[in-house]
Length: 193
Image (spheres, rainbow, N blue to C red):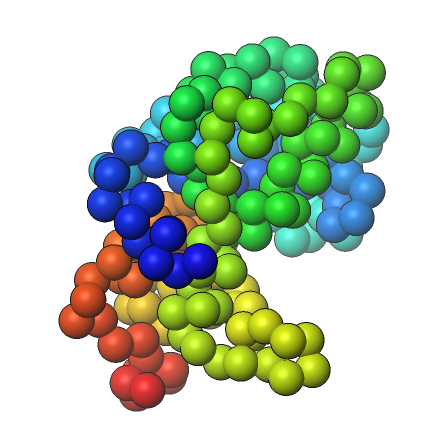
């Protein structure tokens, strides 16, 4: 998986996507951002949700119902997303989760489900970073996952605007570029491992 991820990065035709949502299990997207390999913003938008944003979610990302009141709905934003990602490699830190939220946002809006994998190729930076780190977990039978902010710190990437879709895109890009550097040695608490 890591080899394919790094090969995809070499093509340099990917986008990095991140969302902020109203919940972890049953939720909707309330912010979405997409950047290119240079870190330029292709999309950064709040999304007006169908259902209110729970207080617990607001406490994590700081996005309130008032902030999304005049934002475009998922109907509108999903079309912009489709145009940007069509025919592209799409990198997300926890891709399965973000696609799930895209599906749930469409469902809440009464839209048909979009199979995003039919016209774009999705890569999970979280799983690739877990393999890069190499911390095997016998209990789960896979490499141990790391939160994005922890991965960023371990790679010397500045943790800034965490839990903001654009900020998380930029941190993901920093982690990706660190992994692509063959001479990179991740650090834990400032100590190379």
